[in-house]
Image (cartoon, rainbow, N blue to C red):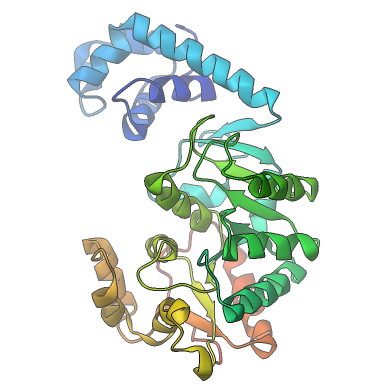
Length: 350
């Protein structure tokens, strides 16, 4: 193992396969040492600020555990290739550029399809139980974005996610499914069929979870940071407060991604399914902070109270007449992968 590079997929995945070694430690080791040979030969003081005592012993003294982890990861990479998927790390040239600008970026990603479709991507998220209004609004807005040349990013769940993916496919635009499970693990035949369509149309399936890993509440929440992180902006089609969709809102705010939502007509504003969107469109940041459950972190509260002190966090899109302004704003975001906390543009006409 001496010649295995710590920044390679094999090296990073081997470290992550060790019990107790998390992404932060794996990344510090990779940045401090070029190969595992250097890790093995390093004196204890070389790990100061890099790995705690149990992790240092795992990496330098427990060769059997490291060898078992290496063998398991080598087999996993082979199995990944066998199903037509690949692995990319944050040190690779083709790693999604916008993820370099977010906090807690994934170190390793598994993917099938074309990573280049992320160059012009927007996230489209929402409830698993949309109303007729939510379904129609999501289909129309996603279709308009697809026609304008944007890649549609969503999470492969039923409801708004599936509507967004299928609208992109119907409009001959690429779409990206970000999973909370392994790239070989799906919850239903309909999800498998949709993935096949996504890939046949030149899209992408992406996850940070290893092969065979089923989704759980934690992985589903964390996949939201990837959905929003690879995207220029986030479109919240329909949701309630609280809801899983609000995790995407939180990540968007932390990452400085603009948030858009369909303007809700008066007759639909009292529908429970629209409460999240209507509050995102009408409440100033400090008012929204009081509704969030769980309560916002210190950093998120600062963003809401300072950067959105006198404006809502989301901008409403009121049908076709608002699309030219919307597309102009999205085009202006193409300047670079990082947009953290830029001054938001005025709300679109609602």
